[in-house]
Image (cartoon, rainbow, N blue to C red; front, side, top):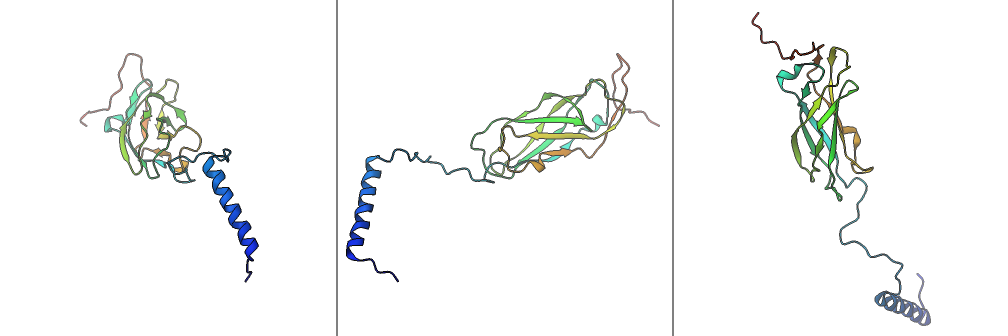
Length: 177
């Protein structure tokens, strides 16, 4: 154990005393003021994720130019967003991008879950066939979302895209057979 002699103790006390005066007087201006809120730690921000993607039954058969109206459940399983801004939602049919009619969602608070109704127009030029609707949530600025792996989900019911004859409206068949 090291014993501090009386002169060394006096020097240490003097240095602490002077440092306290300098801090109190504001001489050490190069130390930035700390914000009143706690700093943002890695992993402490929002973690947006898509829980479910559902379509109305009548959407199983669609045509070019028609509008798909999925219902999407979003969850923020992370913390609050210190700088909230709108979230963007996009849709695609197996890689073919859809045209968003409304794709902006308000940010969610910590633990909040929200069901939103979206609308996407099917562009012309996609070949007829069976497709999976994929919804992607774009959190905005870099680093806003703590986990991007849960920002995409697919509808479990496939969509069948039919060729549309000009002037003929495509609707589900209600024929009795």
